[in-house]
Image (cartoon, rainbow, N blue to C red; front, side, top):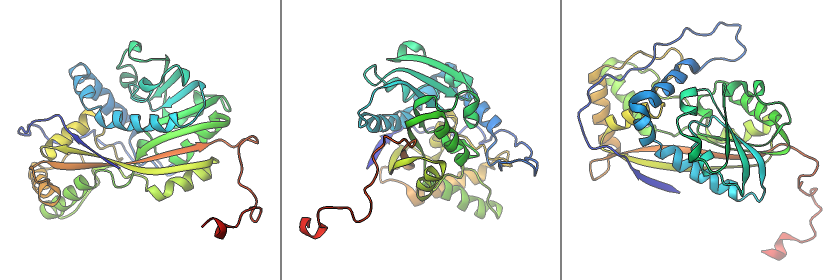
Length: 329
């Protein structure tokens, strides 16, 4: 399934350099988890995105997260259970939480590392009771006791986590037995058009490449990660959201306003303007649409897992079937 979304921009000249936060130093060798992402820089990027223009630009670029939240809600509604409280991990301003209704839950607990983003929208925009907790998603058990939650959801925040296996384990530990985890995260093919255009332009103009787009989890790894974390009754599926932009420049601007700029540890401070101009031309040449616009693909991995419980349905033992498959077919 693919959704074509038309971006908001009209074509206009690019007026600023493409830059990011200055990189932090690499973590010491004794660190338990290798740091791929600069979480402090990412928090600042997201804070600035919401603070700019009183949040007008941030609200305008909600279209990807709102669409994914809608598709996540379809999956939640397929689960015929009402929850007392649902935890929205990495909630942002509440893209998913705003869709919750009293028939599904009494309360939502929103957790996010960006305080400005967390408090962007008023409580009146939600249908259920809202509690907001400013905390790092990587340290979930610091704010949620073990075996305390009925359901935890996460809408497009886990791709900036350094220790994804560890966070999944923490989610499982925070859930009660038979508790639900429902998540969506960007997959490895996200923004492949932009990635290839930047790489080809850098090789041509600068003789090498450096990472400008976050490395993302491959779809085939998610089931293994959920299983290793201790989840059962797994469901994993893949979808795409395709967005049309007048050019690469408008895509870069929207990514900035989404708080999705580069936050890789050791990243370059900037890209040369001629390299960016070459990347824009390559982008349009390789991927451009007939109407002159360019597409951007966001690959979405949806996942559902349950904390094990003795009351859950279990597969029958091998060889216990009463009907021969040949008779059915």
